[in-house]
Length: 187
Image (cartoon, rainbow, N blue to C red):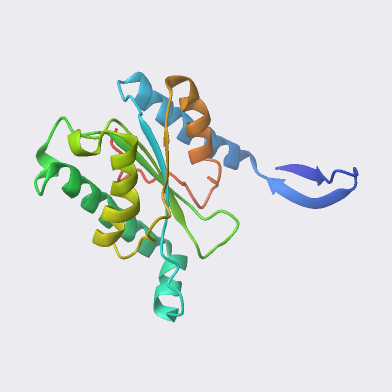
């Protein structure tokens, strides 16, 4: 076990954080998996961050954001709706669809998750930045009520930036939470 002491700008200790060795190994394993996908031919084109709906005044929906299994189920539904929009109902049988990597993060809040998506070039109607923006901010939230409208941040990825994006996607990984969802990620 390692201890890290964070210092403020004045040099005084702020808060003691415990960084366990297995946390670092989990982050490194997730980063290695994404790098392996790139070495095997994945050409990431877009990096998307989209926020889940926090439930508002509904206690049931707010509790749904805390339950990890419910968030995973919602993420699986989002992937299904995204690829249905891109490729049609039989998208699972298509061999030339865009490969993607999905991860869930909570950030500072424990009740407002968001997902990170690294995806290859999208098919024709959504192959530009403007149309991808419409897809993730308007079309997808209409199909998936679990997403907020206009909450997606879309950025193009250069090959040189792929390592930094991979590191960012797996920064919250620890022993109990592997941020990358291996069931949804296309290897």
